[in-house]
Image (cartoon, rainbow, N blue to C red; front, side, top):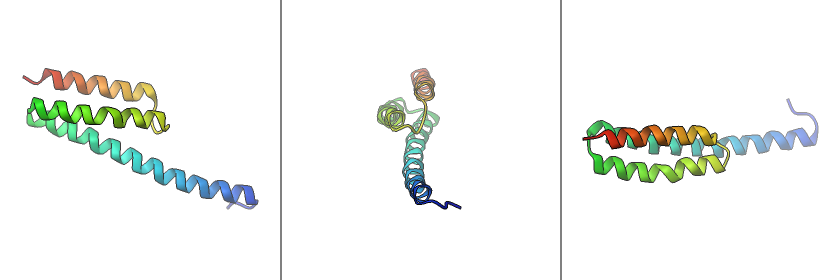
Length: 87
């Protein structure tokens, strides 16, 4: 348990940051799931739109420190390839 005033404050800040990051991660996953569902349905237009909507969310996650830049790039690259593969 935090004892000093500074450590108590840091604990409060960590809780707030955790909540914000958790919400942001959840939002990113929702966008990625929508792309996955569009790919699974085989609808290229819907998949392309979902991918375009997901891209800024992924990059925002990078700038906010929720995920690493290379992770977001890898996810975008793989999803783009799958969307382009839809006949």
